[in-house]
Length: 103
Length: 152
Length: 266
Image (cartoon, rainbow over the protein chains, first blue to last red):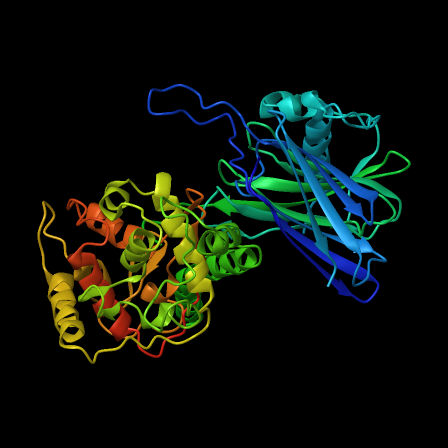
């Protein structure tokens, strides 16, 4: 099971800013190892964000997203106490789901 | 001041990029758009010129540093003040795969996203907003990628 | 006369340009670094480190919560900015990472020698790095105040100073070659002068740090050992007296400077 994400969600006015740090190699598939062989691409492909169980954003990522990816977005109408869930799936089928409460 | 010729050239580049991603203008909310992210050749991207509307717009903003000390991690953001935005895209022209990330918006999300990309070299980076009526609007900026040094 | 004036104006205008270009480049780099401060991947290692402190592990199936980092068993807050220091139970001056090895051995039953021999980035070295990241975070923004009361602490400072200036290796480098003068840099990397207090969040005050160039979390041990490698010396070794002595020298010089660890670096 992949390492946990760090999710911070902060309410301010009529929205909540969500900042996520994901733990992932995000191997581009462009690098070569010591023997000259291509290190296979291994990266998060899909990201889903939920606000209180409702999907509010999905994303498709390519291998060009940086290692240990950072993501920031804002949910309209989210307030303190609401639940934010982030789900990711990578091209090898591994996935991770973490939750945070809006502060 | 940007001349009309320069504006057209930028539009052509972005149109080409979007055409190569297979997204524009009839995009599908498929599970994972492999063709989009497989677009490797910048040459091929530049050749194709999309016929639909594609305009540079002051209502779209690309945020990022002018100089990145290391191409491994470049903070890039796409945002727009337009209404009815369906998708926000971030592209790096000179990357082997030009499309970095694609965000599918909903009414509950502010049309602003930030992430970090890998950049192979100095390049123009693009933010594209696709609205519900199929229009694509973009903004671009140049990000220089440099090699910092050692230690650090 | 008018033509001469024109040339003078042109010349002074051109002279001003390089200065302007230089300012923009380093300003640009500063902006880039500022953009990365929020959302430092070091957070991921910090989370792991906190976990490792509390979880029961190793042959003795115990946690590290009784580990004495210099301020008493289990006291983590403020410990980072007082290391390296002398420890009565080992009768040695120890830095954070070698002290963690002591605790991992005595409390959890791990083999310190084995971990010290393990290359950075592998096996239990990753645990030490994660723990160091969390422990440094618990002292973030606090000011360095290494003790110099014990005779060994004072000796280690002097040893560290001598090592700092000791030249050798195929390039005849010393630490001072890069860090002994103001205003030095390697390509775009500014090199802080470390023979005195370099200010808040610089040098000793900036490690452990997440290095974006390779996506790795580095503790001070890796930073010091790698500096030696860059000088074309062999690694002095993990937790070696040499690296600890240098830590004392750098840490004491940084007295009063605020720690920003865990930091983010190129």
